[in-house]
Length: 471
Image 1 (tube, rainbow, N blue to C red):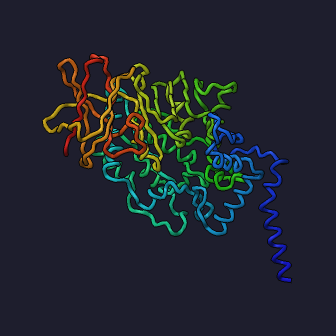
Image 2: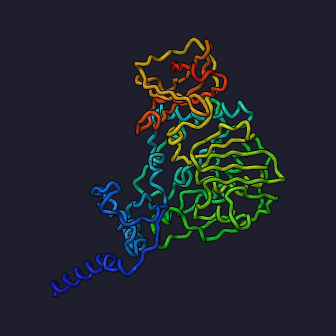
Image 3: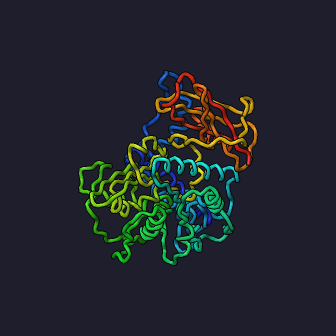
């Protein structure tokens, strides 16, 4: 009797495992999970008429994408691991009371911080960005949106010990030392007893975003509508990004706030779509995160012009911002290109970043001109033997980037001295190496780069030197 049971159990198990494979010729899997593009069946022969060495890897990707009932199988597997066994899976941590958290926030939560030099590099980068914006009369503001488990940590699962400090805490102290304008959203949201984050999503809800919006506008000293007392409804209709990652075939919905706002006259410049502006706004404010790489609006009843370099958190700020600025330019492309700041005439510049991603600020140098700096006797010149240095003349200026070979102090600043026509001028250098120009894969804590406005120099007579300020 027991033997028959085992045979039957094995047979059922094999049928379940083989069913998707057997159904592949008859069932077309049109699901496309995440942001992946449709994958074509790989060719055995490559474009140069040789055997495709990557066929195995490409076939595995195609097979995983085309197997029938893929999302159902992933949902079943993740349900078993997260709900029954308590595992974290697909970068998702299953917390208490149905809360989901991103495992990308664990280092911040347990207090594992970046090095002092890397944190200073972030602060120094923001300082130079602010200096550049202020030189053209624009206000600059850095806004780091806290991770969900920084604010609503009570439902983190057992086994994760909450740390006493984080990279964000140390960074804010450095920003204070450098007088960089930032908004302390962590303190603001921590002192609020309302639920400000979505239960099955990484982001704050629209109520949390409203608090964040008012804090940002106050920090910019921008007169604005507060929407205090605005009517709202709460609907359990939000398909959270973490829930979709964990249960793709049947994501768990959670509560979202919906404010009843009577907007002043505004129009969308981008995205361009053949639909009413109300429908575009509803799409941008939905849970699909589509059409939002670049958003531009105009409002004839407001004043001021806003440039905001952002991530997905700032999407929830959109309905408030478009109602309070004559023009908004919201980019999700992490290039921070403000070379035409003077011509565009932005009055406010906001650099928004999720807490878990603030270390990416020093991944690539911002596309702005390095501001002039004051020369002092404390500066030490770096010899060519002690660094890697590359320069090139570009259409938009003279570009310098490199990496120092020797160690420098955790708070030492790097400068570029330009000599042309017998004149020497000093410029701030971003503490960021241009990996593409230098041909390196990893960023260095001792990198630097600077784009110099060379309109006042002879392009054929420019020499660059690197100096450091030892502190």
